[in-house]
Length: 526
Image (cartoon, rainbow, N blue to C red; front, side):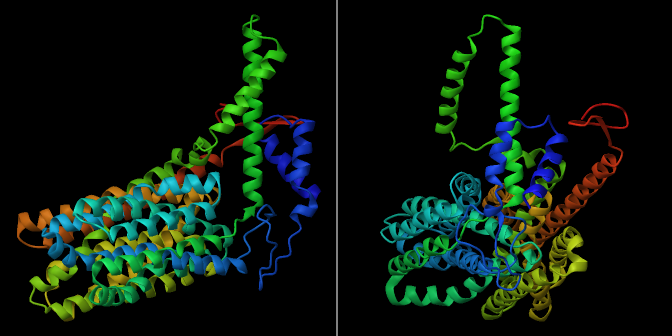
């Protein structure tokens, strides 16, 4: 096993830079000791040691991974589902603080925006320390924000405590909890994400009547206090997120460290050759020691290596598509009930439409995740994501002709199913585009991109309703936005295929047994 690891590693090294030194080989031998790699993993039980430093050749696809899925499910319930239930407090806030709906609605927008905008911070803490640290810290902040909100005396107080403090806690907990699921699963990744992210719909379905009952029994202050205790369970879920080290992550990090060390040595030697008045090697070594200390002090800062995927054309176009997706998906959830009431549907039937949408959303998230794990469909995940986003947009385009309850029920069914389907595929597609090693940082960026559309989307749709006097324009813009998002992902896929076709013309020229250089057909070095 050790010989196989060393041969694979040296193959990667020869393709990028000169052979590693004896000291670096010794370091590699220490990292890749057979005793550190021998892991008892059974596909049925997935048993593995408790040590978090044991590198695995591949994801276990089970075992403790299912506990991670359950923990992520509960984190989703305590973050996304609880934040959706904040709208139930709006009537109480309006009556108590004597404010209108627009001022009160900013609480919900602030929570969603803060959760998404600060998602990269959760990824940074997760990468620098551990997923456990990020999730537990997020649970403490989210719980503290809800408890402090129970003592609110004005809406501005709630903007800070509920919107900023709780939103930051959700940001630190949500993104790292989602990303670690991808570490534990490969063959069953889509189904695992479907189960984990279904907590949003199931939690909303269960918590909505519970929160209403708590408000009636204990007032809105007592309800917020109890929700603060519930959300504190995020810390328990974070403790169950056992870190996992994969062999591919070990190889990539080791190669990056060796490359950076080699570049640093070459630059210092070149500087000494160009300027003979530079300090002696002993003085240079002292300087290097001080520099290493400075780097250790700044280790909490994010490294560019963690966000190298941002420079790839695939991810850039995918990120642009997410802007349109985040804007388009928010309108139906906010304006479906008012639109149904405006067409003559009763209040009870309009509320039942949201229940249908929520239940079908859960079914879509779980079932589509299971379907996408079938072996013959795995290579078509990106196309299925494109299809579900596009069909969601098409559903919204038919809203102007759906002006009765029997016609709106099929809309709620199809829109809810396709919405749940692409939500389950977002982490999977992000992993396919950015790479599994960059998944924590990539998901942080993905949720960050959702922040601004979540903040400005509903107000823009409301402005369209006030300007045109109907909901038609708001739903049409929403549908077209999601269709544009799917078209952009198609463009990203074509860019990826074109780049891969160019890479097929790459010729490997081995000029020396110990070194290898890459040249294209035009003889320009890459």
